[in-house]
Image (tube, rainbow, N blue to C red; front, side, top):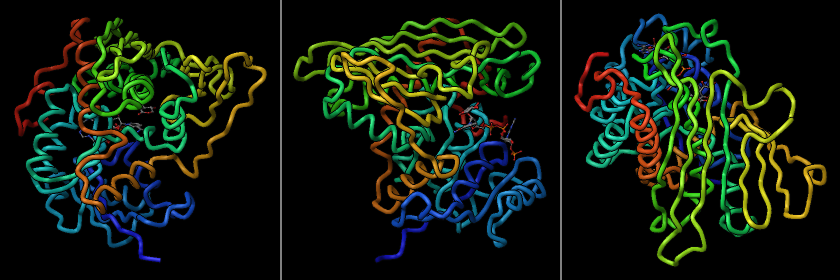
Length: 383
Ligand SMILES: NC(=O)C1=CN([C@@H]2O[C@H](COP(=O)(O)OP(=O)(O)OC[C@H]3O[C@@H](n4cnc5c(N)ncnc54)[C@H](OP(=O)(O)O)[C@@H]3O)[C@@H](O)[C@H]2O)C=CC1
Ligand SMILES: O=C1OC[C@@H](O)[C@H](O)[C@H]1O
């Protein structure tokens, strides 16, 4: 058996998801029956200090020879880094990803890709120019469950999919939990429910209705969106979206399809998040519906209820996750690098842009603008 293709990662920022991702990277791939790729963490950078980066590497049990850097520019100069995982707040993704690409590094950038679609197009254009790999880290797309559900739809097991309803909401006392400075509500950090959580509701709508079509049949949806703002900062705390995907050309398909994407900081998808009470996602076709339990970003159970059957007739299917589940997107990055592909077919550049454009339009309809310094295409900008 040939030795696995090995990818050397640099971690940019040392916050919560950086730690979760890094620990997942270091899990033995055989624990998820993977043998063709493997991952090494060779460096991490903190904008706070080199000591913070050192502590991060230690906390994640990274190899002792992994390099700690006290700045992002130092990280992207490291010749041992093949690909950088960008784990800063949404507001910084554009500047940080441009830094990496211009230094010749492949990039996996956390979601939301950027603050707006124009920035997403700019980093994609730069990746194309530099012949580099770039992907938005919408990790849920790479779950075996997501892949299986997409295939069921493409194989016609649901019949014609007319509607997808997806909710990704937290029940929180926003004032107590996040105040005014936390990235979740801080407009300086592109805070708000839409870019942080709503993108997962949109992910389920898009991966079931849009992504399952042949690429040349995919058409961007029209969207109606409603935003309610958190009084203390103006970030969106409730965003509800109705998307209409036109009938798929060239063969005039029988219908268009609706997506209802919801996100909310005040009320949760499940009243009791530890019980399987109701689906976070419903994928509704003419032969039946798939229900996914949620949370939308890391669902663990799903079921298919054929037309004629009741909820009580069909058991939930548990989809086990040997770890947190971020390794699957990393495995996809490794396979793309191995095969010389600049983008993943699971989440290509065009689809990331269409989703960013959808969120832009919802923000436009509701007068939701972030500070110019995080909406700008200028680079470099000190944030
Ligand atoms: N895929 C998933 O499941 C999840 C994804 N995310 C995404 O990951 C990104 C980061 O989220 P999360 O890890 O929770 O955020 P954290 O606040 O925990 O970490 C963000 C890190 O970014 C760096 N940073 C640089 N500049 C700033 C700044 N001005 N303000 C705050 N932090 C700054 C800091 O690291 P340093 O000081 O070392 O430079 C900080 O620790 C977001 O885009 C979010 O959407 C978040 C949670 C889950
Ligand atoms: O991506 C995410 O998934 C889990 C949430 O807790 C987090 O806020 C969000 O960024």
